Length: 369
Ligand SMILES: Cc1ncc(COP(=O)(O)O)c(C=O)c1O
Image (cartoon, rainbow, N blue to C red):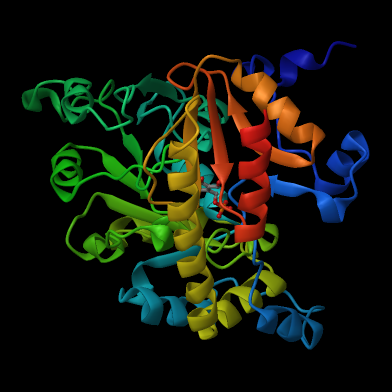
């Protein structure tokens, strides 16, 4: 019996996603003790969560009861952290879940969305899963966003109400992954003047010298801002992200999200993280400090060209030798970095910022290559 035709055609033709290998698998593959692996390939936080998170989880009393579908306590704490009323805030199983939810809310097969590569891969991944058409507006060689090219992807304003062909979503990331660059207020305002929902992903905002635009959601009916606990709060493994949504949008997201999308452990850990934010933000400051020192160190290596970063990682272009070989040589020493071979990122490595000791080991390894 042939049952493959039952699968949605866009999914039958989809390239499988290649996820990062789990730590233990990598350690076995490399023959390196897990304790000796320096994992700088997924922008995780080298200091981990607040110690209070482990204490709270060990004492959690209600693991056998379903979680609060509305994340009430967490949203109240987020309102305090962000300065935006909780009515605008929805929590997700990572920011990743919220990206997928937005597609399910807005696009029908064939609807158009705008992606600005090189950037985070989940926007185009979820577009493919949801059978949306992607217009790729490529960033300039310095990774800045050509806003006029985004504007040019829209028809003349007289046609903005046309039933099809007008892009519905624009994904922009500030600071951007993988280069760490910023999007100015003026450029964001130009995007907001377009007749689409602008999804501004601020996953790395805590590491940036620029202020968040989270509270702008009060003033712009088409702005959505996504954030996460994965990076600054070290909770990548517990999957908690959140977003600010216009009230006319969030009303519908509440209807389609899985009722228990954020589990008890995730809600508790995120809440405790906000209570202990002073500790976590001190770690963020250490990471930013380490980033600045490591950036200077990279500038001293003549075959590497680092890009300035507002995040917890640095993108480097490798000159005069294959970046893939550099990645492999580092991996043999138990140092994992992210290698890219896609358009706009040829010969590039992205290095997450670890502890000062880890970065010194990496610097020594690079100098010896
Ligand atoms: C730009 C960006 N957005 C979102 C995420 C994912 O966030 P979460 O872990 O909350 O799903 C990442 C993770 O690397 C990212 O780089």
